[in-house]
Length: 333
Image (cartoon, rainbow, N blue to C red; front, side, top):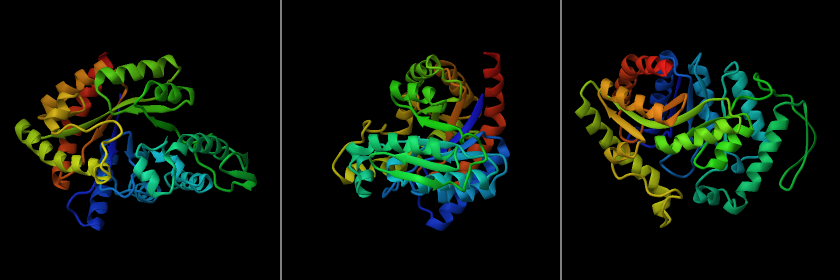
């Protein structure tokens, strides 16, 4: 059983410079606590994501950590020139001594694609072509590719990743075909679904030959006082929800996969979050992990209006009282 962290880097009330310093400080805490990896979202023109260029932010993470693995979950491939992306991946893997985790995806927001002048209807074919380019470019010293959108002829690849043939692949999974794709490409998978739906995705992944980490994302807030944890979680989540819906509401639309829960309590009832005392959080997650059949738990500690100090206290209690006990329980299953 491994533990990871997911971070939207969504807007709060801190000035931007202080915001980034606070988040980078948290990555040092994750590093020291023994989390496996730190995954960041990519979003554009929205308060949901203040890391629109994940490579820039992650280069700072590389220099502030020593053991923690890290990467985007996911790079929105259709928004990139493939050669530039390959070079950034190689740099990050080298800067970190081979700790980079390569999350890839199409991108979920048609509005963010439109801002970049991308026809969202073409994003799937661009994603497929860039994936083919990446897989070749990361494992060769000369790139040759002739496709619909990009052509490379005897392009020298002087930058190489530490990890061969490429850094570990990660896929966000909301549908069965995504789980099957993750397995077919020898990657790892993460869902943001409830336990029963996650179990269906994990089964598809394993049946397809997937042998990597199969993870489930969950919002986590821990306090010695369970009532205080729930109140804190609901207050913080309200701002996260506003950040999440911002770009859709601005364009008079609903999110692609539907409205998010109105409150944190409702989100917890849906099986996607937990707030409480260490014992309450442990009980919830032990049942959740067992039902979902995952071997990787991806926690979202920092979100919305949650203060840096509140986040640090939550992480400390989780790593001290929840993570070791959950590891022991999982080992006995």
